[in-house]
Image (tube, rainbow, N blue to C red):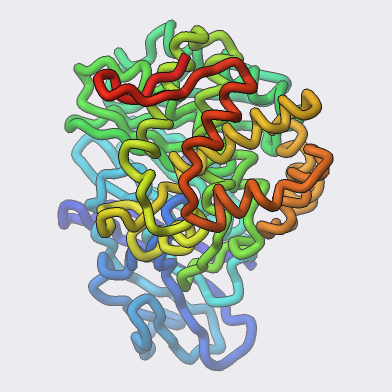
Length: 450
Ligand SMILES: [Zn+2]
């Protein structure tokens, strides 16, 4: 028996009308839940604020449903149940849902209920869209709820696409909002870094992958990773977004391995109904930030000079902004749920993205200098021991694998870079020097790398 979801626009602008049908496994109390957060942003967003009320029916007759927590409801039933509700879809970012006259964009994790404990059950989805509109979504009916909420849906009067195959995997760039964004320069670059990443990791976990892009009317830059797709929102249409789009696309593609497949134990499986603290956010975002840029160089999209400029940019985001952070990287990872994305107290937070990228860079250079190995061997082992076995990793697992590749202890390194808020400037300068690079600060020019 599949759980069924029907979605259509309502006469009220911005509201989606949703019907959810399920059959109780056992007669009695059924606990209905809406996710409070979405993977990719480790912060409660409480999507239930967009649902005024739920109504429940069984055999066409209304039955009682009680709200017992902000995102939780219960009802008593023994026969098939239908729940009807409206969802206010007016969050125009990559992780939200939005209805506009020429666009329907839905993240199902925002708006589709599930029965607690039944997240692995098969689902069927039916969406009504205006006649003639095109749509893209990687979810196939019969997939699990977990897959459904990892598959954003986009529909519009026109979707501009570029499709190709890489190592047997079908790739597509799907653009809404502007045909101009899909230049030959952009599609060539996407093909190059995609090829390099797939060759570098050796295996790709899925058979089809979509780079979805909404070119929105306002200045904006946002991307969210998924297993079979990424959603990128970029605007306005008249700016040259090429550099941002290659950086974002390369970053999000590496997340197919580094989070969608190779995932911290705390997030395996995802618990959508509560905050889940994890101290390895720097592995997820730091390594992805560092390698996402490096793949642009390795694939020939960026010259060495362009790469070093990009790297310096990331280094500055740590050393100019967060070098005095009182928190260690793992404390800031746990605090993602508190203040990981907006502003935080001055000198409190270390960025899992930028300090995380410094850790990844330092680790990679240390490995290369010691025995010619690199982060590549680390990520291959992480994929073989955890990703491919669908097992979550701990911080100790990651450190052990790094030490195996290094052939020695890295305890002091991880203490200084990750567990404490030690000043790592001198240490990093020494690591750079061993690789023939000078990273220094000049009172006139600020930080330079050459
Ligand atoms: Zn990321």
